[in-house]
Length: 128
View 1 (cartoon, rainbow, N blue to C red):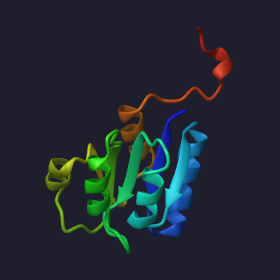
View 2: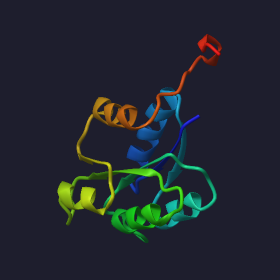
View 3: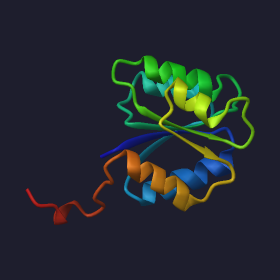
């Protein structure tokens, strides 16, 4: 199962996005800031990080740099409504995608599905 780490300081948005991704069959871990996310990244196998840029304690750019320094670095998607960085700058730093807030759930799911293998919700239909 694909594990996604969702890092967002806005509780309501974090909860909504987590629920939507879980319904799509992804395993979702959440963190309210980059510092909490960093602790998860060193203990869990994460395939994809979806992170806000502006957060307390450790911002998304510092988290991106940390994630890219890991031996098995996950793909990182950056989210922001107000950022000191452009999309191109974030991509140059290692992000694989950038979504500007507000975005739709459909936009987020399209990005995620383009980056990771979509899980089978009903594993019994898989052929071996």
